[in-house]
Length: 431
Image (cartoon, rainbow, N blue to C red; front, side):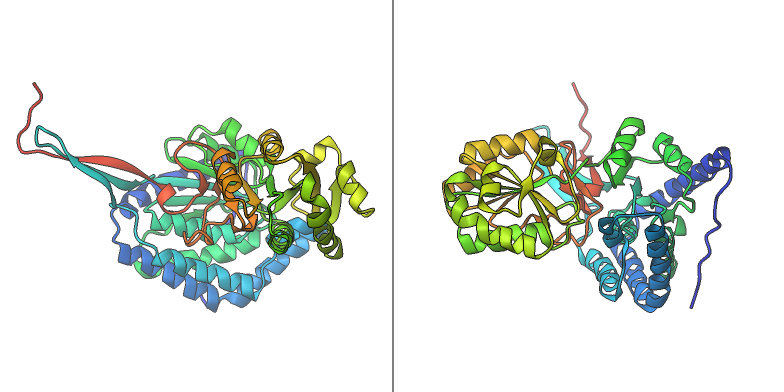
């Protein structure tokens, strides 16, 4: 078994900045190679990395067990531990995700549009890599593979800075990515991992606009706010996944029951988990009781308004803060509303523009919801937990962007590209 040792950097702030600067220069050089690398070579690197992850499963799980033990000793929440924890199935999914990204069409060089001007100029708009992408994330070690793979497929070099909770797991996964790069003859600096938990590394990355073209943060509010405040380059980010499921009066009861439960409880720790359940007051007496039963039986704490508490004594009183909270735990806020207009007003007032869903058989109501909810992902008659690049057929995602510039929703290979114009003439000059 091959072990790739990356020197640990735990010196003074000055040395951390020097080390990050060296990584940035190496990434910029690697990006120039990747921009013109053939698809076959990029795909070969991803496929070899997938093989390495499967071959090195015991090593990855051992590293992850150390991370989990450490994180538990430091008081990480159960939701945080769930995001951190790997098992054989989850690790296998990481390898499968690498292969799925390899199978995607190569976006680099793809022609977006082409036209000819009256003067004979032939103009084409084609996709190009962004260059160097910095990714700063917290406890989910699978982000190491997803981010590295997507950036590589889109012709970008990447610098990955994982959190202290997932330090050993991310190192083990990164080793597999480097093995893939070496096997395909691509520069190892194409996917680099910051080998320190020193927070100074984050500041150094955010200031390094000459070498990093875009930053993607994945983590809690404090991390996202810091990145948005300090970054000297564009940021793809979302502050929270405060997702809603709205049960319209014309919802099918069985469908509403299944969707509401799945949206909350499939995995409570993901950003697409529903945090607020809205229900039309006119249908609440028939729609809500079985849903509340399911949630309570699964161990979910239900916080509700007075009308919902009147339906079920297990519901505790919701406060104003509950409508604004991304729990990422088995807790949900439930509110009854007076129809579609009230639901739209609530989502606009309290939502985070991430993912919101309506359950209804009324086509007109669904059309209004889809048109008027200003979120990156708007869903009709399906769970909010489909807010995922893999589920969108994008292979994987580097994150969900709730911004309005360039990338919105799952950030996959296409969103990790820019474009340029290719202008072909035959001697034209401008009068």
